[in-house]
Length: 200
Image (cartoon, rainbow, N blue to C red; front, side, top):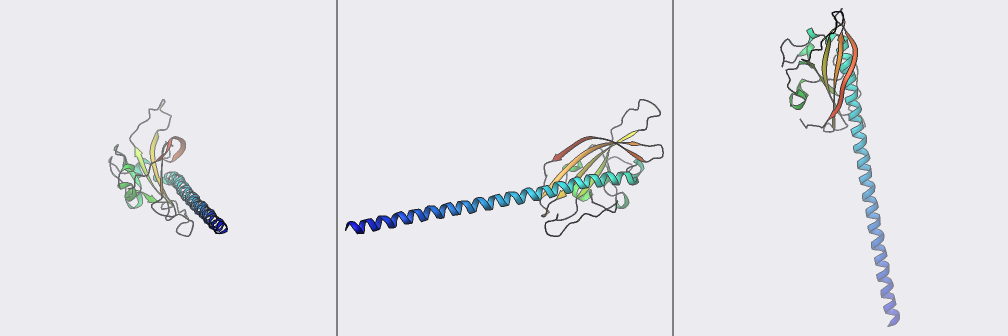
């Protein structure tokens, strides 16, 4: 009787140890999956962030290829261009980047610079980033007649991750000097920020 009791205790102890081992294994596997998911999300966000930064750079190249002159923008505040002036808006103070119009009015990377942005394949972004350039109605007083006027542009860029719903929105305000021959000369960046995705 004593031997039977001891056998029953050994079986119970073995079952408890097996249960503990199974719980530890399941917990470890779950933690590994969560870490993998977090790493994948961090990688996808980094891809979207880099894509948005690339779009900001492409927008500056776009401005300096001739589309940054005052004449290239719509004549009236609140209007946006189309076709050859697509992606250019003359701001009337409305924050277009807060509205659904941002996706519609923005243009894809390389549309006017001829650059290519790899996308669509595995581990690449779902689609090329996009940007919108707004000419701000903020004059800068010149200290002398010889000083060339400056224009201020707000550039909003959208970068996508491997899935289109993974987005990063970046925005800068650039102060760019106009030269006598009506071209633009790089001046300085006034601000840079990341905007929380508005899910537009």
